[in-house]
Structures are given as structure tokens and as C-alpha cells.
Amino acid sequence: MTEEQGGLERYDRQLRIEGWDQENLGRARVVVVGVGATGCEISKNLALMGVGKLILVDNDVIELSNLSRQMLFLDEDIGKPKAIVAADRLRRMNPLIEVEPYFEDVRNLGESIFEGADVIVSCLDNWPVRRWLNSLAVELDKPLVDVAMEGFYANLQVVIPKKTACLECHGEDLIPKETQLAECTLRRRRPEDLVQDLKQAGIEISQKIAEKLFEHDIKTIYDLKYAHEGVLMRLDKKTLEVVRRIREKLKPKLPALQSVAAMISGLASTEIVKILHGNKLGEPIKGLLVYDGLAGQFTIVELERSSECFVCGDLVEEGLTITVKPDETILDLKRRIAETFSIPDPEILYREWRLQDDKRISELGVKEGDTLYITTSRRFMPFQLKVQFHKEEVTTP
Ligand SMILES: [Zn+2]
Picture 1 (tube, rainbow, N blue to C red):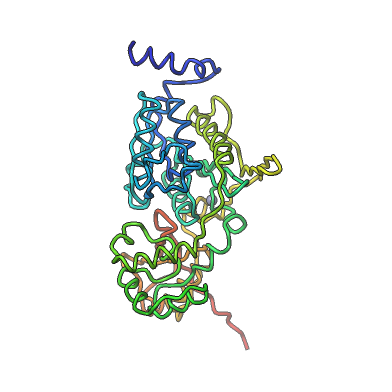
Picture 2 (picture 1 turned 180 degrees about the vertical axis):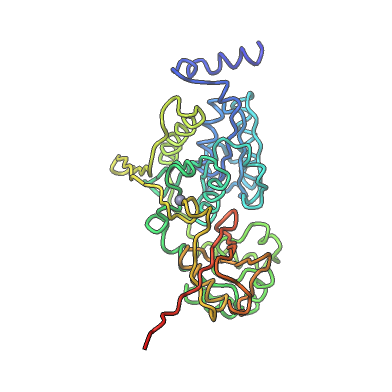
């Protein structure tokens, strides 16, 4: 039997669906970021349906507590990288497809992995990386399907860049406050600041450990929570143990249930198939779909795209405007940017210089209408801010 004949028989039942285009599906390329409960389920669904190429990204290894829901993994896989094991299982489930795994923090991967993608799927368990991926999807103009779950609740959002709301359009209402502003501590810090911040969170560490963390650029609670795995691997054993213990306290693991993962992943996979068919099968859902497993209810929260969104809004390309005062320091300006855009770690670039915190606007030769570029770990690409000088009110006698 040729591969084509095998394919015809393998996919026989779905080929009976009106409008179904298996050939198109076979040419499609989907990137799944996060291979936990929902990542396993969605990549399994896409593999079985014959999506031609799956790219899996996850920087975690398999633990015993994953096995109650991450359905591609077995006891014998404990300690192995999730992406690699999942790729191997999926290839066996459907030998007609190609699977490319990356055991890596998604933020370290090159753009080229996403460029050929037809859909990006976010199956992440944290907001900072989800926001980063949302911004990447918008920048590269790729549809993003985002799923999240906690206990009996789950949600699903389809982002078609510049057409539907992105994850950031209603960030103020939908992104938990804790991750928005609590981390807005800026960079000019000393190890004792970190000791103090942790103390307030009920966690004690020694000054010596804090100094060691600073050597690796881990300076805030935000850094502790979300530092790349690669950075952690460079820490000595004792410091790494302390970091893992702190992380467990700062980011307690959320309750999760296989049946809920399967439910939301099934819905997400159907949306992905619809997108891959170019809407010939139906339009993807608009807004945020929320599943309440306890009540057995689905709700769709309508979300309009915000023209003022700092990721996908119409003003982004022209550059948003920021009003500055000549005597304002860069640190003050960073604080304002951090609060305005809910980003924890803005850096300001002006004519290829990275601006120093203690400099004042007036010292830098910045003129009205100039562009500042803002980089942050929340964004894939820097965003632009156009400078407007604060007009002093002139009082006439
Ligand atoms: Zn947006």
C-alpha cells in the first residue's frame, strides 16, 4: 500500500466531512508551545487528524505528578524532556506526519521556527511567557490559539492578529493584577532589596545567596519566578536548590484535572482545524470561551479588539506617544512606562543607545517627535514611543 492509499484509509471518516481538505492539512505546520496537559492533548489531536508538521516546544522534564493528565507520557519517561518524548509518541501514533521537538525555553528559539507556522498554540502555565508569545504572534501575523485551565475551569481564546482581540487588548481586566504591577520593580537594585522583597513575601534568604543571584542577573522576585532554565543551570547546586524552593512558594502549582484538559483541548483543536481550512469549515470563535466544569456551562465573553492596545492596536505602527518632562530622569520615565503598559522591566533605547537610569531627558538631546524604543521580557519585539514634551502652562499676568 502506498503512503497515499494508507492515508486515504487512515483518514477515511474525516474525509467524509463536507469541505474537509486533507491535503491542505498535510501541508500545515503548527507550533505547540508547552507540552503539559493541554499541549499533550492538542498535539495528539492534531497528529491523529494528520496535520503535516508539528513543532513542540517545552523546557520541562516529566515528573510523576504529570502522569495523571499528560497523556503522552508513561512511568518510564520520568526525568526525560517532555517535548522529545511527546514527539516520539506522536510519530508512532501517526507515521505520516513530521514532528520536531525543542527542549528549550521558547524565548530562546529563533524567529524562523514561527515564520513558516500556520497556527501557534499557547498551552502555557504562566502569564509572562503567554504575553510574550501573544506579542510574537501579532508581530508575525500568525493566528494564536490560547488555552488555560485551573481546576474545573478552563478557557480558550483565538487571536487573529489585527482582526480579533489579542490577549493584551483587555489585559487590565483579564490578566491577574499580581502579575501586572507587583513586579514593577526596576533594575537599579542591590542584593539587600531582594532580601527585603522576599521577606515581605514571607521567604527568608541570606545576603550571601542574594549576592550570588545578582551575579547571574536575578535581581527581583519576577526574575526568580521566571528566569530562563538556562540561567538557572549556571547556578551552583546550593543556590539552585534555594531558587527551586522559593519558586515553589511563589508559584504554587495550580489544581488541574485531565477531563477538563481534554475538554478544552478538544475545542481548541477543532478551532485550529477550522483556521487551517481558511474558514471553509466555519469561522473560529470570537472572544473568550470559558468552561465551568462544575456547572457544566460554557460562556462566551465577547471581546472587541482595542485600537489602543499596545500590542495589536492601530497606534502601535505609528508609535504611541509619551509625554516627557526635560528634567525627568530615565528611571522615572521607566517607572511610568512600567505602570502604563504593565511591563516589569522596560529598557529604553534611543539612537541605538541604552539609556542610563540616572540621566535626565534634557541631557540626552531628545527632541520632540523623536522615537524611543522600549524593550521588555514581555514583548518579542521592542515597541516605539514618540516623544512629546510636556507643555508648561504659561500664565499671563
Ligand atoms: Zn491587542
